[in-house]
Image 1 (cartoon, rainbow, N blue to C red):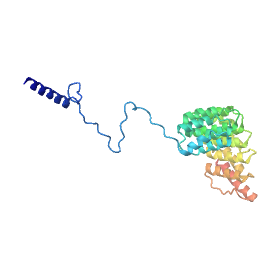
Image 2: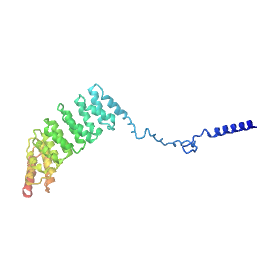
Image 3: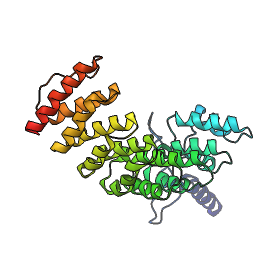
Image 4: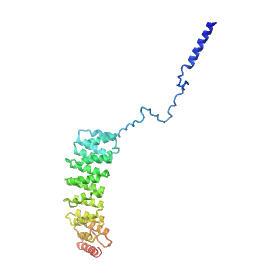
Length: 317
C-alpha cells in the first residue's frame, strides 16, 4: 500500500512541474506575459533602437549631372576642367557636400581659368559668409588678373555686409585698371555710402570706361557732393564721358544755375548721344517746356533751340 501511494505522489509532482515550469517568473513572483509587442502598422516607420537614435541621416547622393561635372573636375585636361566648372555654375544643388568640396579644390587649380570660373559658383555653394572669406583671399591672387576680377564680381553677388568695404579696400591697392573697373561696377551694384572716398579718385581716371563706371557708382550712391566734378566732366574729350556726366547730373538732381548752363552748352554738342542726354537731364531738372530736337540735322535750327533753352535758364535758373 505504501509503495502505491509513493507512485501517485511522484506522478503528481511531475504533472505540476510540466505545467508551470516553462513560464519565467518575474521578480515579484508573477508569471511574465507571453503576448508579443504589436508589429508596426502598415505605412509606419519602425522606431529606431537606442543604439541608432540621435545619429544623423545619411546625405543623399548629388544629382547625376552634378556627379558627372565633379568627376570631370579631376581630369588632367584643362579644357575639360573649365567646361566642368562652367557646367556647375549653371546648375542647382551646389550646396551638396560633394560639390562644395570639388569647388574648394577648383579654386586651388593650377589653371587660372578654372579658378576664375569656380569663384563664380562659390556664393551659391558655400553661402555668403564662407564664400566672402574665400573670395577675399582670391582677390589677392597677384599672378592672375582674371581671377581677381571674377572674385570681385562674385563677392559683390554674395550681398554679404562686408563685401563693399572689402572691395573698396582692395581697389585702393589694385594696380590693374581692368580690375579697378570691375571693382567700380561692383560698388555701383552694392551702393554702400562708406565707399565714396574710394570711388572719388576714379572720376579723374585716365580711361573713359573707368570714369564712366565711377560716375555710375556716384549715381547709385546719390552723392550730390560730386556734382561739381561731373560738371567739369561735361567738357571731357570723350563723348561717352560727357554723355554719362550729363546723365549723372540729371540723376543727382543738381539744379543750380551753373549746372543748368553747363548742360545747356551741350545742346549744340557734335555728338547726338551727348545732346540727347543733355536735354533729358534739363527736362528732368527744370519745368521748362521748350522745343528741342536732339537729332535735328540743320545746325542753324539746333542752335536756335539751344539758345531758347539758355535764355530760359538765364532768367529762371
